[in-house]
Amino acid sequence: MSSAKVCFIHNKVMDYRLPLFKNLNKEIDVDFLIFDQDNIDNLDATAVNKITLLGKIAFSNYDVIVCPDFIFTESLFTSILAKIKESTVVLYTEVWDMPNASIMETIHKKTVLNIIDEFVDAYVVPGKKSKHYIQRETNCEKNDVFMTRSACNINSAKPSDSSLDKFTICYVGRLIPLKRIQDVLYSAEKSQYADDIIIKIAGTGSEEYLEYLKEIAAEITPDTEFLGWVDDVTGVYDSSDVCILPSERDSFPLTVIESMKRSTPVVVSDGVGEANDLVINGYNGFVNSVGDQEGIAEVIDLLIERPSCRNKLAENAYSTINSEVSYNQMVGKFIEAIEYATK
Image (tube, rainbow, N blue to C red; front, side):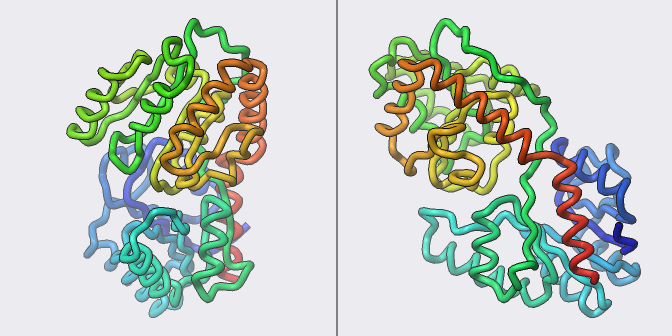
């Protein structure tokens, strides 16, 4: 086990990250520096801002700095300061070659990554697509990249045969245009069984986009329920036959992992990070091209016509997620990256 003194920087203490942080705290000597003070009382951590973060790094003797990539300015200056202090840097990043990104977005992403790469000793990534992207776009060695799935803190539920009166589709997540939730609604409408479908949409976000979705819902055949924010999403997954996430582009959303943990098969677009990674087409879910409403409708029809297929997908989703995703695995990979960076 590493004896290094570690500084772990993060934007906030999300509930689903708490088990990772607390288990890391048991295994290594680590200080957590957190920007957002919400929920910080649940972790032995120090609240920082841009100035106090740099001061903490400058006047502490850390062997390793773990940075996230979504606070670029802070990560960059922290990495530079770490090198001045002769500390090593581990970057946790979800970056990958997302489809449908603009040329400017792509150039910006590559530029930012290559600047930070000059100071990084090891990477931790949540999936194969991130791993391949980092290895292709940076000067890192093959062994510099450690892959670990992002675990979530909802309990697993073993699969059972669906006993719902109507075929139920759910969407769980933010309500923003990039998620393309309209594809869920229109795909259900295109199904030949539209009269026997219920759609549940859980989440909050853009009020303007929500009104747009409600206008569509009022015009289509399937009944649509807008649930708003749901504290315990397990009930949403458990009362659904399938979860659909048709995002234009997405990193590695917890929705996929949560749904599979509850034995609810997923249908995702190829703009989602777990597509062709955790989600294996026809085995534990389905992957469609972004915007392919007809393709999603065909999957819906298949699952309605063949309940045994849906049940097999549920079994495989449960098996996949419980064999490949856990907090212990996350902790192990972070420790491996830390030990590698300090050897």
